[in-house]
Image 1 (spheres, helix red, strand yellow):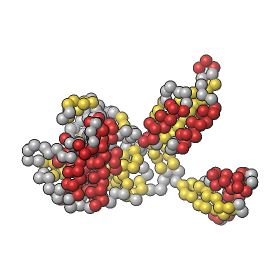
Image 2 (cartoon, one colour):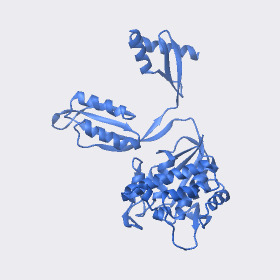
Image 3 (cartoon, one colour):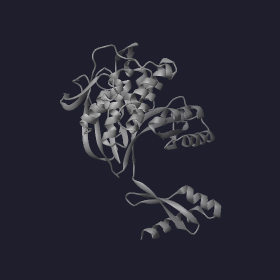
Image 4 (tube, one colour):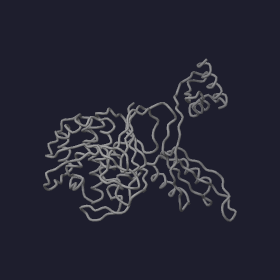
Amino acid sequence: MKICYLDAFSGISGDMTVGALIDAGSPSAAVLDALTSLDTGSRFEVEKTSRGGVAASKFRVRTDGGPRTHRHLSQILDLIDRGRFSGRAKEKASAVFRRLGEAEAQVHGVPVEKVHFHEVGAVDSIADIAGACIALDLLGIEEIHASAINVGGGTVKTEHGVLPVPAPATALLLVGKPVYARGPEVELTTPTGAALAATLATSFGPLPAMRLSSIGHGAGDRDFKEQPNVLRALIGERTAVPEATLVSVIEANIDDSSPQVLGYALERLIEAGALDASLSPLQMKKNRPGSLLRVIARPEDQERLADIIFAETSTFGLRIHAAERRIEERRIVEVETQFGKVRVKVAGHGMFAPEYEDCRAIALRTATPLPQVLAAAQEAYLKMTR
C-alpha cells in the first residue's frame, strides 16, 4: 500500500500541501493543467525556493487583481465536478469542501447552504484543495496519515476581524485531533489546511512504518528564524513492522466510588471504544484507599470517553496526556480442537495465544473447564505449525 505522511511540524495550509506533494514527485505540469481546466481565470505556478535553509517548492495562484469571488458550497462543488481530472480526486476535493462548509456553518450559526466561503471560497483556496487531491491521486496514494498539528499562536486578521489562533473554523475542524502550539506567534495552520488533514488523514500521530520512496517540502509564505516554514510529505510503501500510533491516556484518582460503580464504568468505557481500561489500587491522601482509573483511547475518542468518566464516576477532574502505542504485527489463524474451532492470535515473532472469547464460549457450552479448552487450542496450533 502506498501511503503519504504529512509532517505538520510548522503547520499546514493548502498551498503548502500542494507544494509538498509536487516536491515529492507529483508531476507539476499535470497538476497545473488539471487546475487550469477549472476555468477560474487564474494562473498557477510552482517555483523552487528555500525556507529556513530547507529547499522547498512554493505553489502560487496568480489572479488579475480583480475582486475575489465568494461562492456558496454548491457552486464550488459544481466547479470541481466540471474539472478535467479523475473522479477519485473530485470525490476527495468535494469531501474536503463539504467538511469545511459544515465547520464554517457551525461557526457562523447558519445552514451550510447559506455559507459564503469568503477567503476560503476564493480561487486560491479552491485551487489549493483541488490541487492537493489531484497531486495525491497522481502519486497513487492509497492512505494518508498526519502528525500532530502545530497550529501556531497569537492572532490572525480575517474578513471577520482579528481572531485568536487557531481561527474558529480551524479549531472546530481539528476537534479530536492532536494539536499543539510552538514557534512564532502567527497562524501556522489555516482552515484549508485543517480541512485537508481532518478529511483525508486516517490517523494522527507518529510516522507509520513505511519504506520511504520520496520526500517533499512545501513552502509557506513566510520565512521564520525559529524553524523552517515548510510542510513535509513523506511518501512510501507500508511495511510489516510493529505499528506506532498516538493514543490519549486518561487518568483519574478516585476514593469515593463503590466497586460496583467503578466496574460498571469500565464496562461502559470498553463498550464505547476504549482501547483499554483498568483500575489499580492506590493509597491516597488522609490514608484513604482509592483506585487509579486509566483509559487508553484513540485521540478522536478522547472527549467522548472523558464525558463517560465524569458521568459514571465521582471524580471532579482528569489528567490527559498523549502517548505512543506500539502494536506488534499479528494475524489470526483458526484451529480445530475436540471441542470445536478456536481462533488463535499469532504475533510476528512467533508468540501465540488462543482467543479468550472463543475458549470461554466453548467452556460454557460444553461444561468443560476453561484451562482444558485453552490447552487444547494451544496443542492444536502447535501441531498445525510442526
